[in-house]
Amino acid sequence: MRRSGAAAAAGGAAAAGGAAAAGGAAAAGGAAALLGAGAGELVAALAAPTASPFAVIGGALIDAAPTWAKDTAIAWFGTADKLALLIGIGVALLAVAAIAGIAESRWRGVGVIAFAALGVGVGVLALTRADAGPLSWLPAVVAGAVAAVFLRTLLSLAPAEGVVPAEGVVPAEGVVPSEGVAPEGAPSDTSAHSRRRFLAWTGGAAIVGVALAVGGTLARAGSTAVTVVRDAIRLPRPAVPAPAAPAGAALDVAGLSPLITPNSDFYRIDTALVVPTVDPAQWQLRIHGLVDHEVRLAWDELLALPLIEAPVTLSCVSNPVGGDLVGNAVWLGYPIRELLARAQPHADADMVLSTSADGFTAGTPLEALTDDRDALLAIGMNGEPLPLEHGFPVRMVVPGLYGYVSATKWVTDLEVTRFDRSRAYWTDRGWSARGPIKLQSRIDVPRSGAQITAGDAVIAGVAWQPGTGVSGVEVQVDDEPWQRAELAPALSSDTWVQWRMPWRATPGAHVLRCRAIDADGNVQTGASAPPAPDGATGWHTVTATVA
Image 1 (cartoon, helix red, strand yellow):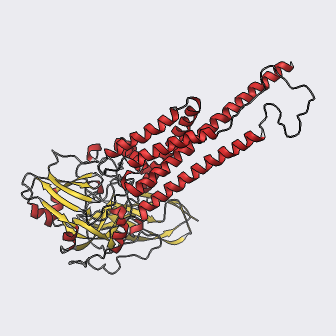
Image 2 (image 1 turned 90 degrees about the vertical axis):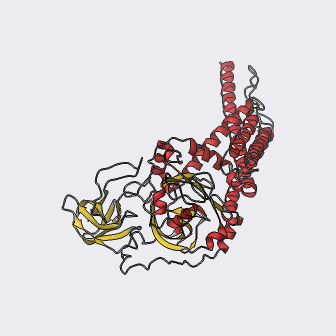
Image 3 (image 1 turned 90 degrees about the horizontal axis):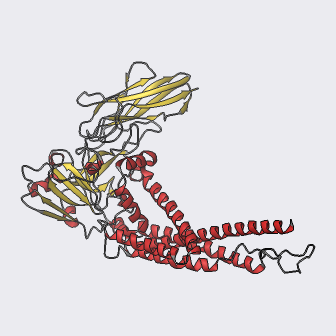
């Protein structure tokens, strides 16, 4: 019985020791991966800003993901979709790193080779990106090398776990170990010291890795030469300033979206995990394709042109009914139609394929860039140079079209072509080719689920259909007849307009709906449709409880 009990104890101790060893190896793998990733991010900030290993992996995943996955990500996370993707990549990387650590502890060299191969693979992938440079491979290779070296280093510091007495050997009953001597099978002072040293090195590697990643990200975002250049730019005065806002255009309703969306609050949806940094001194726009004359335009030449200001509302095609992927700003730029007039497009051309510095493409109907709307090659947003994340130094702004076919950021190339010859990034993934913005309205006040005090209240929101304009908004409370809301004067037919309606709120739960009427008398449809493939439809509906 004593022999059997000793054997069981030995087996249990061995199992516990094996689990502890596996846990330590997994922790070593994760810490090594964090340190390698941090080193890679720092090298990217210093030598190849667009080649962050996380951004390279994320960009490849974005390009490879099916349309439904992209739509789901935007629907779930909105403008935080990129952060969600990066967190997901980080979690997956840690899981792979833990497995590599365990594998290395059992089969020497396997985990090291896995980390090195991952670094080389991502480095090769970085060289295939549209914005790749001569050193784009370096951050990923450094990340893989650092992770591989530290995985081996950390495992060499790991304490031996699971020491048990030899089978069949049992200490004499009642024998007490001498002072300072650990019972056989129990951790000694030496192994405890080894464990503390291993944990200190592992934790330290993880902390340093996170610090390097944060430092590299901050250096890339806030201390780049392009940021310094942008901050020093003073925009030229527009030859044609934006019209003054009509009296009463901004309604005084708490919680209502402002008439002009601040740059910091303007929605951002694009495919760039790392914001491209384009030096204005190196920027150049090329207009070519089905044209009589190729046109090239440099930054200084663009600034010397007679620029105009225009308030324009932009909207993402992924915006659900009542969503916030829409904003209104005053843009400064040069009419694209004037540049196309220089190029003289061929009679059979019907599309302009615009390309971003990071390789993104959008196909815009040629007529939308040559008619009398304010389609701009924009350099300013709300009185300041474009923010980096909104396209600095130059982007496109085209009223009346969803951004995926018209609002290319960091634009560097315009190819005059045809819809039957060229396809753009999102149209190649199932979205419609021309993307006109649909008539929409939204209730901002009260928010859905709000608790309201009975008595005098207000229902308010915004409505938009850039290129056409809004002539009215109607509101329905529960199943009562539709009522006309007060419509504020619009800045122009290319912007959203605020509206409000007084409401005598009675106790109970209420359902509120709104619908817009455009300048041609068309009423916003109540038929519900998802964003794909050409924009959501339906009436925005909110619930409110009155007490």
